[in-house]
Amino acid sequence: MGIHRIGLVVPSSNVTVETEMPTLLNRHADEQFSFHSSRMRMQAVSPEQLRAMNAQRERCILELGDAGVDAILYACLVALMSVGPGEHQRVEGLVAEQLAAGGSDAVVRSSAGALVEALHAIDAKRIVLVTPYMRPLAEQVVAYIEAEGIQVSDWRALEVADNAEVGCIPGDRVMDAARSLDRTGADALVISACVQMPSLDLVQAAEDEFELPVLSAATAGVYSLLRALGLPVDIPGAGGLLRADAPAAALQ
Amino acid sequence: MSEQKHTVKGVDHVAYPTFDPAATVKFYRDVLGFPVVHSICAAGWGPEKHPDFIHFFFDIGNDDRLAFFYYFGLEPFDGGPQGDSYSRFTEDVPIFFIRSRHLAIHVDSEDDLMEYRRRLDGSEWPVEMQIQHETIESIYTHDPNGYMIEITRALRPVTPQEDLDANITIDALVDVVSGPEPSMAALLTRKAELIVERAEAWQQKQDEKEMVSNR
Amino acid sequence: MTTLFVLDVPENTPIAAVAGQDPAVMIDRVGPYYRIVSDAPIVIDRRATKARHAVWYSSVAGLHRSRITQWDKDAMRIEPR
Image 1 (cartoon, each protein chain N blue to C red):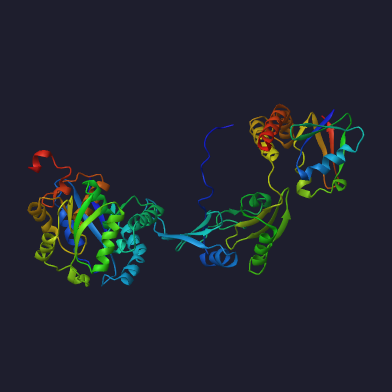
Image 2 (tube, chains in turn brown, blue, red; image 1 turned 60 degrees about the vertical axis):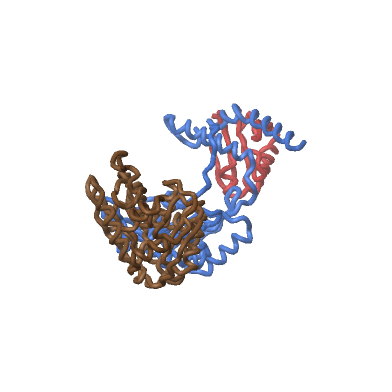
């Protein structure tokens, strides 16, 4: 069995991925994980900075490959989505090729791909979401998800440009934005379509309040990694998605 | 003859090692004009000790690619004096054998062949030979790694009877090498037998095909 | 009997033609091959064929009960085995 080594490629100013992913995965009853990250320099979530960040990908993968990780999560959702539809598949392919060329067995996932994967896994065809971004970037996130065949019926952009500030957005502000959404006919709520806006404690609370499946980019990332590693998806207190493999009795 | 579907699409890449990536890029990209179309930066993460490396690809037409590996810090191995960056051969290995492994790249016309000749002749790697074979004309040089490169054009299209003859040659070869003393004489004798066995029936089928397509 | 097969492709036609100039030589076809037959040895003068080096040395497709006793830049000589 052993410890599963998780590699995280994070924007340099991101502090939430390295907080929420370990918190979630360490709730796993049976499996153990260690976390190793590599950083891509970015201060503002702007198209220019995002392009520069993608160019650092090769270095980040080299660093994590050296650590012999079992899985790599390319954890910047908006960096991929802002390029255009199909980008996460393209980047995951390039990372996989880089790993394969060097003889690494590590599996590759991205936060962007994970969000789509998780929404498909719960058969969500129509969703609502909350993002911290400026409107133009938020629109790109919505377009990306819709290009994957999932309708976004309502959304909020909290318009926080500085990534460090995004990491400090209070939970109340996120919940208020979620409450303001028109959730009629929605199959799911993505309470944070961002890996820097903290939302870990909000997922279960929102699911209880709205009686709707709730995910975040973080819980989707955890789902995707567990599936990729062939491990049971059973993490308490973070929404129904992460209880996909929980024994039926435990769900009551 | 096998009835399996033949759906492969040529050369995804043919790969060689290089100890001089700068000269390799100069030769293929700058002199010959083959664009760099892909690269992978990786390390050796498998069980054996393995340097960091770059794997880079040139387009050689038809979506086919020629690729190189450059390993940081790797020095050439002992061997030689003959050979290239990949294979080293001692003095006594005959040159015909060493030349038997090479990459030949296709061009469609005399003009194209002469253009690549011009590019090579204007560089540090001029054309060493220009030869007309049975139905093709080729120019040859060695790249900075010592790999022999041929650029070739067809003097005329391949005829169907040449396909038949090639298949007869191969069948005869397989028969002859499993026999006691393989030789060209034995091969030609076996070919005559196969010609007598198959050639008329083949011709009949060809004539039928032609009649159908001429209607 | 000396028997030699040559594939009928444009480069080989002159070779078959020169072989056929010998009155002792008979030429017929087996499929797309010339079958060149004689009671005596068959001798083909290379210069008369004007064949290029590569064409000359790959022109023999098959031999029936025969062997090549000379094959150089001057001529090809095939004798009964």
